[in-house]
Image (tube, rainbow, N blue to C red; front, side):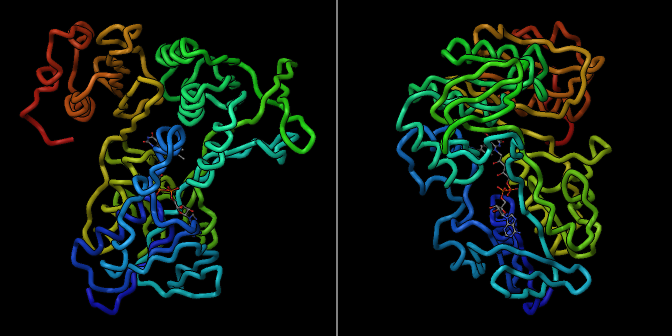
Length: 414
Ligand SMILES: Cc1cc2nc3c(=O)[nH]c(=O)nc-3n(C[C@H](O)[C@H](O)[C@H](O)COP(=O)(O)OP(=O)(O)OC[C@H]3O[C@@H](n4cnc5c(N)ncnc54)[C@H](O)[C@@H]3O)c2cc1C
């Protein structure tokens, strides 16, 4: 590895920032250029729907690194610059200010962006989306004014925004086509627990219906739903999922398909080009298929693995998916990956809001979610990863330590 080499990272979010940090940590002495479309230096998004949204913002706390970090580590951070074109054959990236960057290795960490609701009235003032810190500031400014908000969508983002808005004292209505919140990931049974939590906190849930139009004169005043209702509101927050930002990769004819396709080393279909974080659909050694994970821990861990592989390592990314969410006084962590399952069993009473749910197929645990129960992620991961056969009664009996079930002490770390 010579000092004359240039490694370019496009996308200055969490994955990109951690990759840049890792390149220096691993002793890379060449040029590191980190290009980010946003004016901010890299920051973390999870607080934007939670504490940052609810309270007086402590902006410094959201950043991945101190302001001085990039200069101190000779990382050329280019905030407010968008990569508009790339050529994998010329090994070049073009920025929106006309600069062309030649690279020896390129990492794409372009993340994802909110899916838009393409319905009448979508352009009205007060129809808000939430991805960036600026978006969060705009939603908070509306929360400060009080009144009523309609949240379109009952996924993680919608559920967290609804909780934050209730905590700020607004009237909150969730409108979503699903039968229960978080149905797609958690299924009806566990999603039902979240429905009850929101209902207990005074959220009106209008499920099983869609928003068909936003109505208003300049600003949104009402939404029209698929069951013919018109609901009044002061503003709307839309959280109907995200789509990976693959445009740049597609320009250079990299293989894409719901994300940039990468192998287990996070290498794209082009030599010397890697991808990580929300945008990457990565071959997962444990699952034997490509999966795309839109979660903080995935960006945090994949960035460094991609960086080491840019330096010539051949490290497979094989961590189990993991994510967390906080709504009201209910915190949870979810480990694993389950598209379909036979049954869900509970350790503890879901009504008490302190329990662990397990998604099973046969006698194997596919995923586990601990709710207001802490320090159990490690044994849950081992149960999943090592495919330990389990009996339901032992899994659900709180007197049987999870560590015992997971045979802590044998096997590799998750
Ligand atoms: C409000 C909110 C709350 C969340 N809460 C949680 C949570 O509780 N738990 C959890 O696990 N996950 C959560 N997430 C998800 C988590 O934040 C993401 O998985 C993570 O941010 C992904 O990081 P990333 O670096 O891959 O992409 P991003 O964070 O999307 O960063 C990508 C960056 O690349 C830039 N970019 C894109 N294209 C270009 C280009 N052509 N040129 C230059 N720059 C470009 C973008 O502007 C962006 O800054 C939340 C996300 C949001 C939005």
